[in-house]
Length: 209
Image 1 (cartoon, rainbow, N blue to C red):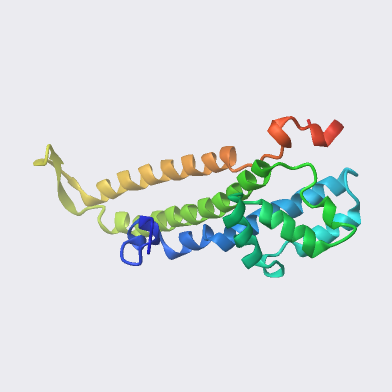
Image 2 (cartoon, rainbow, N blue to C red):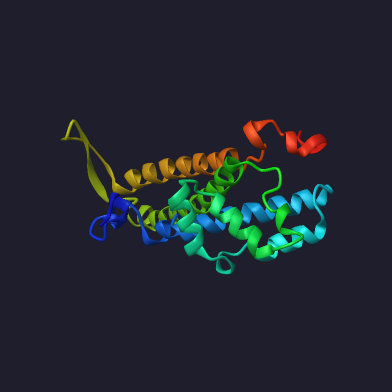
């Protein structure tokens, strides 16, 4: 039974889309965490924090299809911890001696928050494409109705005459401004954060700042 409007088979598409829901489904969330674990291992290997061979092994194993998701989900159900099951299963999959380097120096929020941003980046791109499509569709409407007379309204009543093309032009201008704001928000907000326990950067030593 759906517990949220977005999950409803009757009403879900009124507040979301299949494409957007696919981005935030459970398997996508798990994969985003694995992507962060892999990227973290690569970065740590580049600065000599972990062996390069360990980073290669972590990256190779960091695919959702390689893990036993039933065990991951059961671990989450029992412990209430959303990430620990993924980390343990990833380490078990990699095995000795490289498995212990997975999640090295990281804390839970490093992986979860950065994973959320990976998904948000995909969602941001999807919405930006929709805005771009609306702008492209509205432009011919403006050109078609540049001389089509219409009646402007004030307080729901007829006011001065204008053209429908003029009204569409105002929509285009507003949409263009909103898309510019949307793109700027993406540049400012869609970032990851890896700081170690309680944000101290302690595990990174001289590489922390």
